[in-house]
Image 1 (spheres, chains in turn orange, green):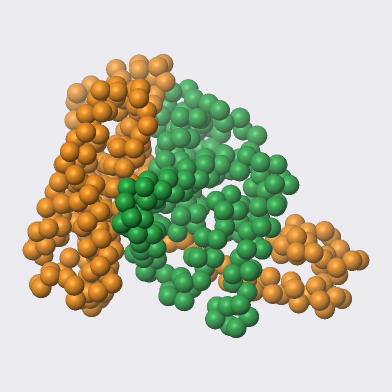
Image 2 (image 1 turned 90 degrees about the vertical axis):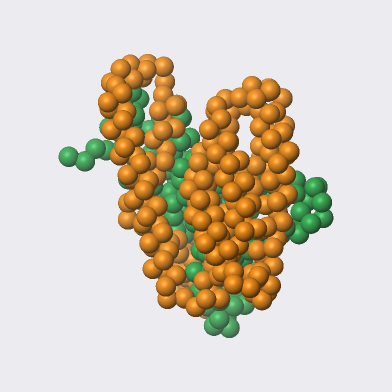
Length: 250
Length: 191
């Protein structure tokens, strides 16, 4: 049998190679050396593990997407609405609030437990990174809206869903910033929260005028510029912790 | 008795939205793992899971049952991941055109350590993450499906919507690139 090429070796590693490949490797030093080298690299890749989501992850996914599924129902399903009397709706809404509160409480307490064992500088660095990442996500939504080239009706359902998710996070970070006396960050987060709420609560399908008004509002407030400046400051503080204003933990 | 994917899909098509929950409960962790390995970021992965399910729901009538539902879902997740990566790239380009600082910020953002990245051990983080970032989105998806999800080449082709030959080529290209980047570290025992 001729020597195995790289493709043969990869297929053999994954159990999809030619039947004779294994036999050849037993007798050919060159191919075996190449295969061992390939094996080491691919085994190293095994160490790139995905984190395991927390318990109840599936339910959280369902709770987040369920409202959007109702919006996407085919016409025939409108009959189901007959079941949704005000009494049922109130009960469902109350359960949803409880679920969200439990989720947020779990997140906060988990963060506290995780943070408790960390030193001050490490804790601050993690917070800086987390807030910076949050600002980045928020900026992404706003930039996509501002730069949307559409001149006709626009569907912003996806942006709204992401904005809704970010509002809760934003509230936590704003409160943390306020508590630590970082008024600059808390003030920008406060403005951002209002913008995110506006996006989240707008109609999902906008005509060109409504969409233009949202864009103008984002641009007029200068929120994108402020986010960039705060994000840049946070990154600077990450790099040089001494750059943080005295007494600030965020 | 546990409902099968096919039964749940039949019910969804008949108008029972709640039947979709069965599919969410059954597949969301595996979709999350796939999304995380595509993005390297927990929050992006969670966003992708939601987007994947929303798209799957909207397109459920197009599912023809030729591939397993999980494979079909992976295909949607793959497309969502590609969209996210392209949007990220577009955003960085837009920022570049705004001003020079924008470019610096975009680069800083893409390199910034997220909590997930911080949690990942230092040495491995500095080697495996960048190694995967060398791959094109299609190569990365093909590799993730083959290496971590254990899919055969044919299934990967179905998930990516390409012929088996193209799927095989993507896996090879991915492994080649990873070897190029990681072999020096592996041979010196750093990982």
